[in-house]
Image (cartoon, rainbow, N blue to C red):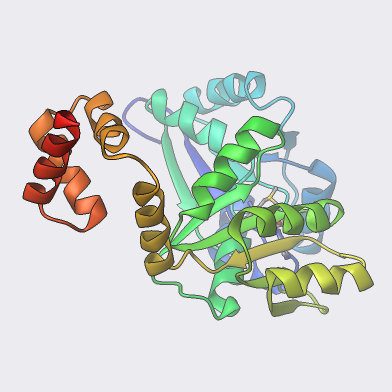
Length: 287
Ligand code: SAM
């Protein structure tokens, strides 16, 4: 118990397929918690039965995540310890645990996380892609505008990109990714930690062709190669070159830069000296 008398929220990572991936610390915490909050109580009950744990269970899911967070916070305030378990993997990663953890922190309630299985890390490490720098996007948004905005951002993302996807949306997502990112390396990881686990290194075009012949099965993690910096640089230069000098200056002046600073930026974008820009603008004024 903490100084304020409140209990602790334990974020408990559970297996994403293979029950052997549960940790000793998670089992001990599930045993000792006053209450277990679970995204899918039936799934968690199966898990608890497997390990011979009997505890009061309550649901905490996408459709009650705001109201139920307040109920759970009341329990925590009374000094109870709560173990939060998501459907699979690490709570708060692409699941409602994020909301409860945030609310607890706002209320000064201690939150701790018990590490364990997480689909994105499992996929990244076996994908063969660069794991030095990566970004995790979770599921692409359903909202059309937001979807287009995120894809546009990903087009320029140089780090390895990790996405979650459900089988029924995989083909559509591969098509969308290809139309914006062009052809890239992708490793499709499915059924991780399970008997039919697969990590298929392909290209986006290859994957689209493959899934014309095969039905997507199981949950997927997509690990995609980041954008090539040189290609991005070339593309940027081409865009500037196609723009008039005055329009290019306006881009920066509209951002609030002085004429002198805008000239510096324009010169750097075009790979020429500031003097060249100054003279070209002067010549333009005289025309
Ligand atoms: N909290 C979880 C975690 O730590 O990875 C993720 C929850 S999110 C609602 C579920 C998504 O994770 C699935 O749609 C899939 O993209 C990915 N996922 C979960 N288990 C997986 C597995 N065994 N193999 C491949 N992907 C998996």
